[in-house]
Image (cartoon, rainbow, N blue to C red; front, side, top):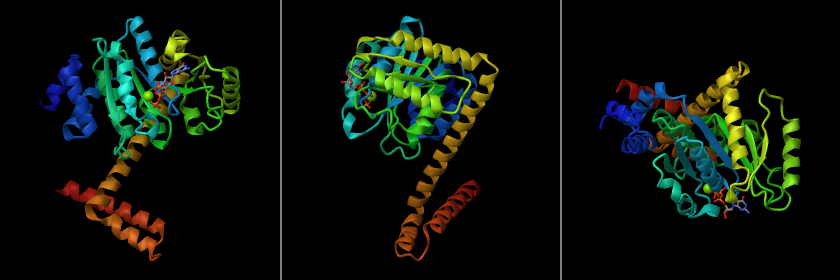
Length: 322
Ligand SMILES: Nc1nc2c(ncn2[C@@H]2O[C@H](COP(=O)(O)OP(=O)(O)OP(=O)(O)O)[C@@H](O)[C@H]2O)c(=O)[nH]1
Ligand SMILES: [Mg+2]
């Protein structure tokens, strides 16, 4: 199936074409890129939602509950789970599958897991591509789960318009150690596992952090949930719907939409640059030479980084001429 046919079939909502298109996007193949370019004009209708937070805070349980609530409201749902491949969540995907069994049997739900392992620099690129495919395929809501651990995950958040940052009363210092970058990109704060002791303390800590954050047009609400029993999930979807209405409605939101677009472009450019630099380094053995020079102090690391970039540009112009 060529790119044009895939585009037409995805747009028509064919599940098999959707799966195939996503595989191409993940592989970053020429077909994948052509499909994304062809589908992009059809995007912008879905409500794209990111769910992020530390390992084990209940993101997958929350995503499943969120998806069920969206279904109750008559909306179709695409789910992208980025496998954190952390030692904590070994086998998490299997657990997620079992937890989401009822959802995978539902024709209004399409779930896809993505491995982050070995996906050097490409996580943000792949996630935003997969979100676009779901959007163009006509899914009303697209939910992306990622572990908010590193820069990669912060950048994945630029793929979605509403980001939910999940924390819990368990672990105590969870909120304190939260990455500042994540606070800034979150539009809805969830305190999950609200059945555990210490919820109010966590809520107060979050309030404190939000109070010292720079003011913005949208004030992130704090929602308490017990994902395991669906408590607070209706309120969470209400809060997300409100944020979506805000983004689509107000004039101030025009500015925020541009900020998101800007962050997305920069994240994608950074990822592409990173990927190309590594590919070039591996392909031409450039890195090995530079490593040797820096390790033996014959060249300083900044000059080595510049040399690596120069090799990337050479490689690129060579590729264009070819
Ligand atoms: N007490 C309590 N436990 C919960 C709640 N939500 C989820 N859990 C439990 O927390 C554990 C982790 O849940 P997951 O949904 O896998 O968490 P996650 O954040 O997706 O984990 P990773 O993907 O591995 O980072 C599981 O044992 C869940 O049953 C809740 O509201 N209350
Ligand atoms: Mg999970």
